[in-house]
Image (cartoon, rainbow, N blue to C red; front, side, top):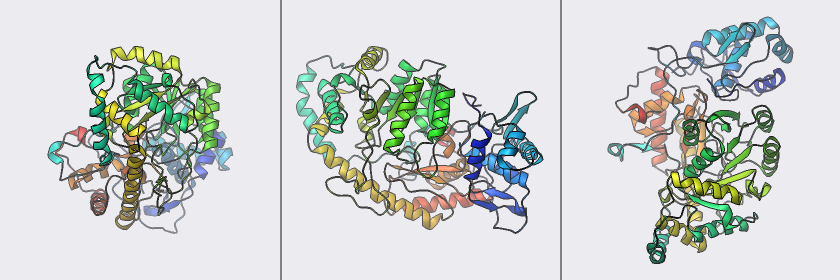
Length: 547
C-alpha cells in the first residue's frame, strides 16, 4: 500500500478520465484506453502466486464496431489511471453518487465499474469507509534501481540501465593532470574536508552567482555525488516516519534511498506530454499532506525528460514556502539542454538555442525553502562521484557536523579535478562535447525505436539523458526480463513509481550511438514479440539483475 492515503474528488477524477483521449478496442469490442492491455484479466497485473504477473502478452486486436458497455469503459479508464501513477495506490475514490453526477452517467454504471475493479484487484471497499485504489497481490514488484551489470555480461549485453555517458576526453585527463599538480599542499594535511575543499566550494558558489543566484562559499557543501547529498538531507531534515513528496514517476535510486531512510512517500503525478508539474496536484498535496520535504527534478526530469517552466517553478516554491515544505531540487541534468528533435547546437552554447528557465534557487536565494543538489555525474562523468548541496549557511553547518558519522568527506583528488574544470576552459568544452553526443544519441535511439517498435509511444524531451516510453500495452517488467535474455538491459517502469505504477513503461537513456542503438531496438522488438506471444522468459541471472 502507499505510504500516504490521499483522496480524489469527483470533478478531478472526471478531468483525469477525460484526458484519456485515445481509446482502442480489445477482443469482443471492449474499450481499452491507450496503453492498457486488451482484456480485464490481462490488465490485472501481478496475479495470485503461480500465475504470470504483469500485463498480458496480447496487445489486443484492431478496432471493431461492437458497442462497449459504459461500465467497462469506466473501469478500464480508472485502471489505467492507477497503472500510470496518475492516481496513487491507496487513494480514496469519491462516492458512487458523486462520481456518477460528475461523469453524467447513472449510479448503476459507476457501481458496476467499481465491482469490476474489485474483481480485477484494483479496488478495495469497506462498508462505512468507502473505496480506495490498490494493485493486485502477486509476485513482488521491482522497486530498486538496477544493480551494476555483472562483469561476465560486459561485451555481450547492451546496457541501457544507466543514464550516464563515458568521460569527455581529453578534458577529463587534462583536469586530473592539473589536479595532480595542485595536490602537494593538500597531501601535507590530514585530507578530511567535511564541507569540501574551500577552492571547490568557491568555484561552485561562483557558478551559481554567474547564473543569477548570488551565492557564498558558506552556502555550499561538497558531497559524494548527488545521491550523497539527497541522503544527507533526508537524514537531517526528514527523520524516520516523516512525509516526503516525490514526483510520480521519479528517479528510482532516490525513491529507494528515501524508502530505506524510513520516509513516508507521497507521490504527486507529473503532467502529460512533458508539460512539467501538475501544479493543482502539488497544491493539494502540500496542503493536505504537509510533507516535511519534497524531492523534485525541474531540469529534464528523470525519467520523463520534462522541463518545468519559470512560472511553474515560481508557483511551486511559493506553495512549498506557504506549507512549510522544504524543496530539494535536483539539478544533475541542468547542463544538458539539447533543443527540439533535429536541432543542432553551437560551439558557444551547445544547447540548440533552448533558453533555460532560472534555477529553482533563484526563487529562494537564501536557501531556506529551496535546497539545491548538483553533480558532475551527468554533465561530466559519473566516475568522479562529486556533487554538492546549496542551502542556507546554517543548514550547511548542520550537514557538515552530521557528516562525521557518515563518510567524513569526498576524495581530494577528484575535488581538485572538478575545480580545474570549473575554473578553466575545460568545463564548457567538456559540456559542449557531452551535449553534442547526447543529441546525436537521442536522434539515433528515437529513429531506431520508430523503425523497430512503431507502436511504442514517447515524447522526445528537449534535454537530459532519458526517454520515457510506453510499451504498446505490454508489461514493461516482462519486456525487461525478456530483453535481458536477448542481450539488452533496460529498467522497467515500476522502478520509477510507488506501489506498482507504470507497468506499461520502460526508461531508455541516450547513451548509445548508431549502430548500437539500432541493435538495441531490434533486441527490444524481439523481446516484445516474446512477451506478446506469451512465451515463457525464464531467467538464469540473479533476481537482483532482472527488471
